[in-house]
Amino acid sequence: MESQLNAFADYLKNEKNFSVHTLTAYDHDVRSFIDYLNREGLNLETFSYQHARGYLVYLYEQKLTRSSVSRKISSLKTFYRFIQLDKEAVNPFDALVHPKKEQYLPSFFYEEEMTQLFAEIDQGKPLHKRDQLIMELLYATGIRVSELVNLKLTDIDEELMMIKVLGKGSKERMVPFGTFALKSLRDYFPVRQQLAHDHDFLFVNHLGEPLTARGVRYILDQIIKRAGNVSEIHPHKMRHTFATHLLNEGADLRTVQDLLGHVNLSTTGRYTHVTKEHLRQTYLNAHPRA
Image (cartoon, rainbow, N blue to C red):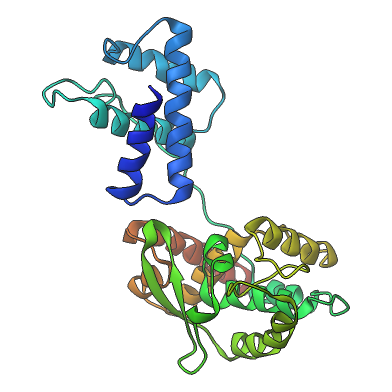
């Protein structure tokens, strides 16, 4: 079984070009399913559609979200397609109806909140210039935290004011940044030069080692603690803010899709719901007879 799982992981990585995060999720989903089979006295070869319905009930009984259940079913559909040598065989998960994912509006910061967050960066910290640049780049580019911590010096083009980003599925894209981010970048370079050693990652911790995603989240948590009346902060909320503010100011959906590195326009489209709600709230607050 372990050899099958390793082969499946190689298939997802090399042929489907899945990200590390997705690979981990699929591996966990399949291993959990195999544990279920062992407990129930079932096996992969005889597992049927009726058994799949039973597994779906089992997942709901675990109090999982609909999004998690939907992903697990997708993982197992893909796994069965991979292991079924007889292409005429019926995939027990193919006829299983996916639970609808929860619909939600991405949370974002208003411009006034962003101004306050920048003001709350601890200027007394030795690495406050690094923290400033982290905030500037997250807000200026909308990149993911995994993309941020993997930025290298060679990915920065100061003249064109662009960064090269390695996104999901190892897809590269170029993202512009503005003058505020450029100034923060140049302020940070001398600090990095004093600390960093034996690597060319842009962001470093206090030991000079590459900064991790967990480190970025800690930095953002410290900023939010100083800003008493601003809601919680996390890297993806900065990404939501980037997209929402662009659309609010008239950017077209296709451009925002390219900047975010979304494969499907529908993924970017959820931000239009946020902007419509923003317009509605502005109208209700401003119109005398609203």
